[in-house]
Image 1 (cartoon, rainbow, N blue to C red):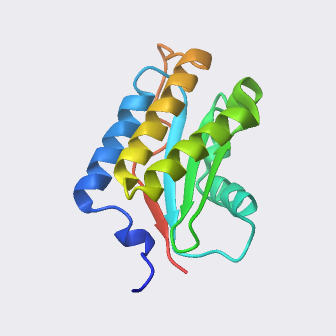
Image 2 (cartoon, one colour; image 1 turned 90 degrees about the vertical axis):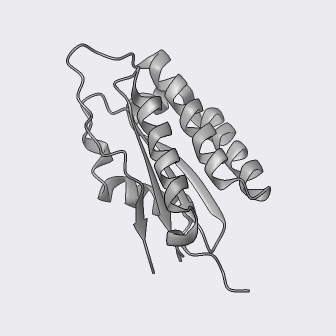
Length: 149
C-alpha cells in the first residue's frame, strides 16, 4: 500500500469542514489559525514547521497571535507553532496537548475530527488571550495549504 499524500489526507468535503472549523475558531478572537499539509520532509518537524510559518507570512499578524498546525503526512509528523504573542500566554504544554489530541485522532483514522477538535482548542485559547477586537480583520486565509515534495 502506498503512503497517503497531503492532497489525499482529507477529502474535499472534509477540507470544507476543517476550514469551517478554522473560521469558527477565529470568530471570537483576533487570533489566526492555519493548517498546512506536506507530503515529506527531511528536516526536523519543528524546524520545518517554523519555516512554513514564516513562508505563509504568519509572523506578520498585528498581535503576533497566529498558530500553525503542521502535518507531514507520509512521515506521520505533527507540529504546532504559535507566534510569540500567543506562545507567551500558553507555552509548550498547550501545544503538546494539541499534538496529543491530533495524534489520538489520526491513529484512529479520524483526521477531519482531529483537525476540527484541535481548531476548537486553539480557538478557545486565542479567544481567552486575544478576544475579538472591534477593528479586527481576518489577516490570514482559512484555506488549508499544501506542499508536495
